[in-house]
Image 1 (cartoon, rainbow, N blue to C red):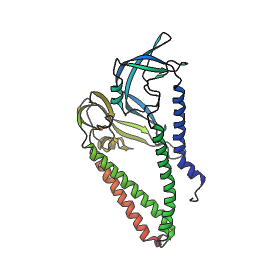
Image 2: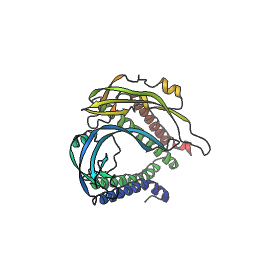
Image 3: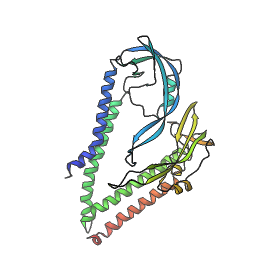
Image 4: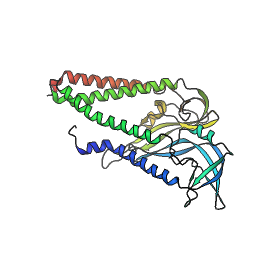
Length: 330
């Protein structure tokens, strides 16, 4: 095993530990829900709605950002001890939105009779589905195994690669620099290829009519990079739009280079981003596999793709130069 400090391995394994803890916690919730009594209920509302979801974001001063997401809003009534109650939680699993909305609405139409499982101690706490999805643990196990293989494979692989390159350089001490530059080049190239493929697929998505809800410049404070100073004020063009796909209403905030780029200059954000008139009709490209994913311009990331490609070439050229002129760095 490579001779690395213990905290390096701790940092690599920390995300897996958090994932495993969350999985165990969710398993305990599912087991507790198995003992919940049931009562007949009826669906009274079945539609989609937009809710704000908070995410951790260490690039911001307050360490979080709020993102509007689409949810299936399934409201059902049920009676416990003569009291009529309502709830809109479908599954014991946490719903983070933007997935399976149309399927859930189709599964629970208005007027459908349902079985409601409720917490006898807190009857307002209830669900319609109290089991984890089929194959959930298997997928989790496979995902963790792959993550472990990638982590330790990378550690061992980089160690072996460093030794391999060091034996072929005039100055073996520059092998870590060559590897770092090469890794940067490879990662940037992969990002460019992934974005190019995503843009190519988005061009083939079906197009529907939509309406601009808001087009404005938002601002936030970036995280501080020094101990006693605040981060810079960042500006971002935000464009939200509404559309309907297969009779289900959705809302989305545009996230392409044309509108999603951040800048420390409000003038640049206004000058070099696309402005839309509130209420204006637009064409929306919708992902048929997940209609919550949509864009106004599937080619919006074209410039960023080229920037990433050029950066990849630059880092690759730098790695080649250092490798072929290693004696200059002695």
